[in-house]
Figure 1 (cartoon, one colour):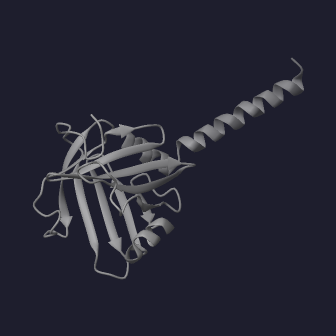
Figure 2 (cartoon, helix red, strand yellow):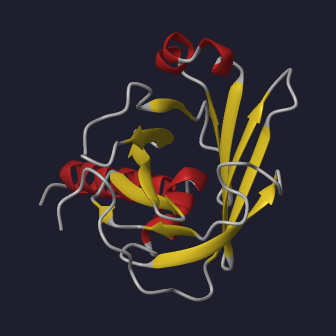
Figure 3 (tube, one colour):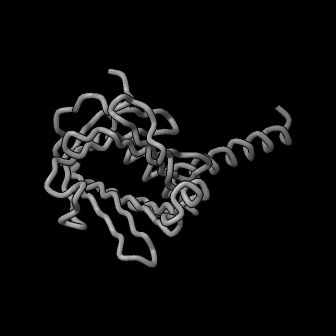
Length: 191
C-alpha cells in the first residue's frame, strides 16, 4: 500500500472517530439517551406547582414512555381518568423538541394540538428548554411567551411550564426510582 494512501486512510479513520466521539458526548444526546433508557416504563408523580390546580390537583399522575423510535419518544401523561395528553419528545440534528398531542375520548384530535417548542441549543445533559414556537403562538396567542423545560436525572423527571410576563407556572415531578404497572392506552391510541 503506498504511503500516501495509508496516511489518507489513517486521517479518514481518525476524522470519523473524532466526529463520532463528538456526537456521542453532546449534552442533548446524553439527555436523549437517558430519557430513552426508560422506554416501556411507567411512573407515578405529583403536582408541585400550583398545588391547588383545578385540573391536576389531588389526581393520580402517571407518565408512560409508551412509544420509542430512534428519533421520537411518545409519553402519554394521565391525569386521573383523563387520558387525553401525550408529550412528544423528538431528536433531530442534535436538538430536542417537545410537542403536546391532545385527544378526545373518541380519539379525535383536540382543536388545540401539537403546540410546544424546540430547544434553541443542545441544552444540558439534565435539562432541556423549549420556548414556544410560531405554531404555538398562532394557535394560542397568549402562550407566545411560554417556556417549557424538562429536567431529568437518576431519580426524577420534571415537566415544567412558565408563561413569561404572567404568574402562570406549572411543575409536575415524576418518580423514576420505582416503575409502576403500565396503564392502558391513552385516548386515540390502539392497544
